[in-house]
Image (cartoon, rainbow, N blue to C red):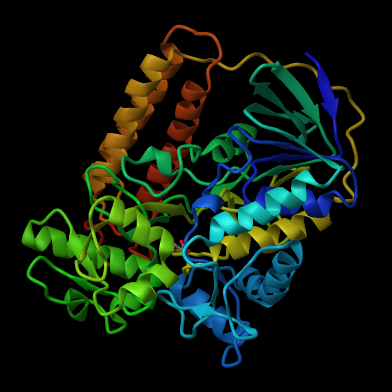
Length: 498
Ligand code: SIN
């Protein structure tokens, strides 16, 4: 198999991957492998923004306090401090790179989201992720030290003497290839596609989690799966995100008879942390036997809504819904994985030579529940640290031996198995869990993995390998949920007393 040699290998092209690539390109040649188009990532879909204490009435101490409260006592305090102290610098870097954020006069316009005690969300209307990704991709394309392979699916991480030294990948049109590097960064994003309803794009198939587990890397907190309280409930546009920024702008949640039900659940009302609001929405729907609740934005005029939330306004108009006149039907959907591959403050995993940043990583910042708009920030801050830490890594002294090809099944079987996985995860590993449901799902997931492994081999195709990655990561989610003996943050098991 043909081997390519770079100083740094990056797997994934969202904000974490491209930040690392741009920073590491100062120290050597970088290769980015991305399984779709370079712009296809969770980053591009982010609506809300990036949290940073840049306002006059704000401070990193307040941002730190809000992050720790949302994380329900399970955050790594050093990681949180590192995050919030580096936030303003990260925003300045993005602006230098050409990202356009909204301004109010000469100051950044700052939005508000749940769990924040101040307005501190730096944003580009309601399409911040797309704008940030645009700036990152432009900077990457004009950097001669970075090579991007699109439609390049990583099938295995390679090790020698316990050190990660590269990866094998299948590249559309080129076939299998080996990539060797001094350091490898996992920046593969989330795992939302293990559920039936998710705000994540189709590429969010837990690839980095499965690759890391295959090497025996430490993975933690996978049971802390964040469900966004407000995604559109509509047959043609199910799971379209209705940003928390709308609640930050005064949106209220109502049940089918118009009652503002958050009064019954939390004094912080619609701006309580996301786990609290999502559980309240779920409870309210169960209590009344309804399919959804409603987000009421009718206190704002059309001009304000189209100015502040142009993308959401336009999407809703396409289904005949005018936000200034009608309530938006909403339901919770999977949104973000707070757990992941364990890293230190410099993005190092437990495997030498292997780094992780962004949603795939567990830096300790999110604890049991992520504070809104801390995810793009985490991707930025920890990718910068990882690039700096990996600059001194050296090539291993050995040459790479090609590994066995991975077992691939047919796409038809893969679709069937993935649907079975999504059904059981949605039924039993959602916002409210039970012991029986979790045990049942663990059995189902293990059974599907066995079935996958026993099915006849088919030629290489991406869908089955993604399905296997989802299965491996789902097993971690369920095992984590079964091991967690108290209800905290995003983990709620109705059979536990606390
Ligand atoms: C949103 O816009 O509601 C999502 C922001 C986030 O997930 O942090």
